[in-house]
Image (cartoon, rainbow, N blue to C red; front, side, top):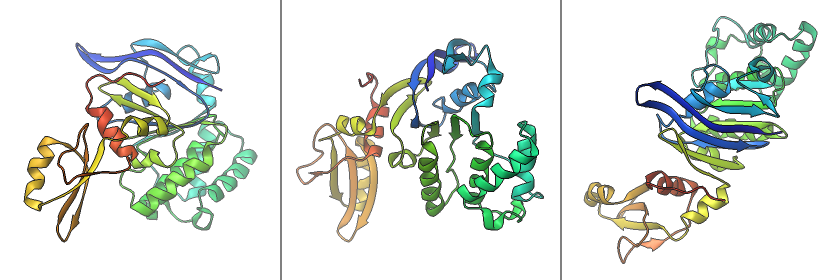
Length: 294
C-alpha cells in the first residue's frame, strides 16, 4: 500500500501558491506532516481528501489516480478535519448512525461498527449522552470514530489536538498509534510533540514546499551537537532570543535556563544537551536550503 504525491502544486491567485512542486511517497504507519501555520498543510489535506483539486501534479493510491477516480479514493478514506463540527442535540450513536448512512453503510453493519468504534475511542459509557455536553477531547474522539466508520486504509487528521488539555492530547496521540497498524495515517500539525512519540516518519513543510522527509532518528542526528542549555539572568532573555533560536525556557532560582539551537556554543558556561525533535524542527525550519535526507 502506497500513497504517491508527485509534483503537486496549488495556485490560488497570481503569485499565490499554497503548494509548490510537492512530492512525497507514503507507506503504512504514521506520517507526521509538520510545519508552521500557513505552510500549506491544510491545502495538501484538502487535495488528498478530494475536497479541492491541485493546479498541477498527480496523486495515486495503490495505483488509483486520485484526480481521475476520486470516488474510489473516498471509499478507503477517513478524514478528521481541523474544524470538525458535531450536532449538539444528537447523542454519539445517533450521530454515527447518520454519518454511516451518508457513507452508504447498511444499517446492520453500521450498528455493529458503531459499537466497536465507541469501545475503541472509549466512549461506550457516554454513548447516549448528547454531544453538546462532550468535552473537547471527547468530541475529537467521536471525530476519529466517524472517520473510521468505513474502516479506511488512508486516515487523515488535520491539527487534531488544537485546544485539547495535555491529558487529552496524550490520550489522542496514543489512540492514533493504536489505529495505525496496516493503514496509512497522516497527522498534520504545527505541534511537534504530537508527532514525536508516534510518527514513524516526519515530513517538514515550509511555504508550500517539502523541506525534509525522514525518520525521527535521522532528524535528531541532524541537530546532534547543536543543542545547548545555558542559565542566564532573566533580564537577558529578550536579547538572547533575538540572537539565537530558543527551544524553551525554564525558570530557576539562579536565573532562566534557555535551550538554544546553535552551530556553536553561545557561551563558555553553556553545556551541550541531548536533542529533542522540537530542536531539530527549529533548526530545519530556520535553514534557507535544506536537502532531503536519504
